[in-house]
Length: 246
Image (tube, helix red, strand yellow):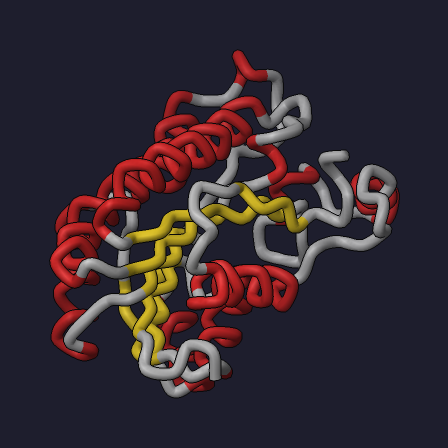
């Protein structure tokens, strides 16, 4: 029960890594808001873990503000924020990615962190406590070709994490990131371009441990970084990647 008495918001919590993190938090005693643009998915995970489902578009200010207000109304405080919601563009030469796809990747992967900071950080500052976790990617550390703008968005997230950590440390708020390698999530097919045995084998060949990351892997890492066990850890980008970035 490492998160007993804690409250948490997990964006993109309706599937993939977000659902894994939400389940890990709930299993360790936290009250969890599962926030997702997919209302049905958010409600399903929330019902399964005894949490609260919330529809949110993390790229829209009013929607993120409503998410924060709903969490405060339900929980009375926000101890943990996990910025997990993310999208990618399909693999393509950088100059061929459409402007619409570029804008979507930046809005969901980077603007969302800014908007969450606008509406959640003041509450954490007032409480002089909090933990923020940004779900980045090995793409921000060791980029794959043909995913340039997705890679850039995750590199941005890692830099933002470090900057946020320095600025918020005097207020008792820790900020960390995790960097997963490709995993068994709805985004896997988009990263690969096509989900075939040959393409999976090509991806797996770059991961020394020899398997994709799982939602449970991310849940375990997130649990540590957002718990009091990591009270001296801030500004890190933890590679949870089976050796991919070595």
